[in-house]
Image (cartoon, rainbow, N blue to C red; front, side):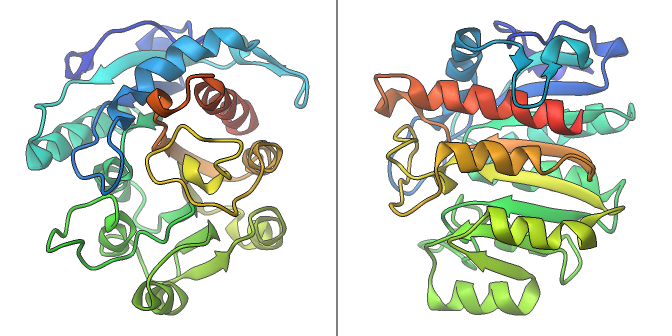
Length: 285
C-alpha cells in the first residue's frame, strides 16, 4: 500500500513503522484549483522541516508525540495538473490507511484534497460528521464554471454526508447563497470558534467525526503563509486551544490544509502548522 507515497523527511517524533502505527501521516502536494495565490503544494514538505523547530513534548497537554504511534508515509505521488487523477490517487491513499483500521492525518495542499479523503471515510462511517474550521464557507456550487475547486469543496462533501452533519466554525467570508445553504444543511458558526465548539461538543460525543482545518481560519497577522488570507480571524492561541478541545471525541481522521510557506519568510506559519499537528495528535491520538 505504501507505494502510493514518495518518502521524504520525517515529521518530528513520527517514528513508528507502518504496521505498528495507529496513525498514518502524509502530505498531499496539490494546489491545482486555487483562486488567488498558488504554492500550497509546498506546504507538506516545509511543515516537516519546520517541525524540528518545536519539541515533541507539549507543555499544555503534558504529553509527548513520541508516545503516539504515528508513521510518516511521505507524500502522495500526484500527476501535476491532472485534478481528476490526483483526486483518485488521494482517495486510494486514504483507503489504504482506513482499510487497515488506522487513522490518517493529511497535510495539504489546497482544500479540495479533503473531498476524496471524506469519500473514502464515508464508506466506513456512513454517519460521518464533518467539523470544519475555515475563514471561507467553501460552499459554492461552482467557481467560474468549475465544480471541483477549493471554493466548492464543502459543497461537494455535503453530497456525501447526511444533512445536519456539517459543523462550520470561524467562517467570515462567503456569498449570500453559501450562507443560506450552510444554515439550511448544517450548523454555521460565523467568526467564532472556541465558544460555539464548546457548546456543540456534547452533541458530537460518540459520533464519528472528521476534522478539516483550513489554516486561514487563523488571522493573517498570525498566519501570513496561506493562499487566501482573510482579515478578522482567530489567534494562534485560540487555534491551538480549539484542537485540544477535540480530546474525547471519536475523531476518525483529520486534515490541515492551505499552508503556503513561500509567502512567509519568517517561517512562523510553517512552525504554527507543525504545532497544530502535534497538538491535535496528542489530543485525539
